[in-house]
Length: 123
Image (cartoon, rainbow, N blue to C red; front, side, top):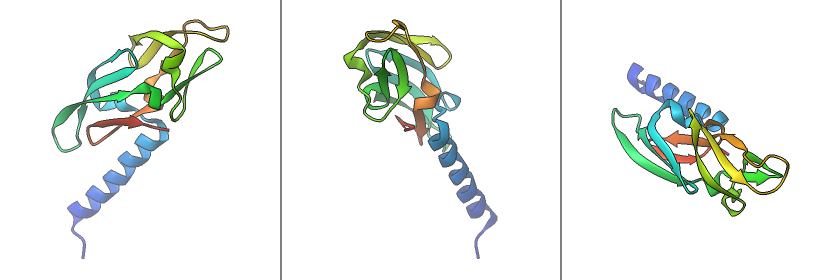
């Protein structure tokens, strides 16, 4: 027979995993985040009462499609965008070539998730 705490832990883990996969939402459990070049660094909760610094190359998570930053696995946006930084909240702004929008904005919460203190692409 399973204990209540084991069942609770399993249910909570499944819910958190589903939330991370559905939209990323890293900023809900990470703080002190910033972008340097194409790298996002943040201090993220490990889900066990602790936290750790984690980094991810956003080229793995974001693409520049005709001047729009979109979530895409191995998107490689850094090949056509530069000068990226956090604008407000989890929104990143860059200078990009291509399309009619020279300064596109990406909501990093759509593209990046926190899995146990480790940043990962949500796509």
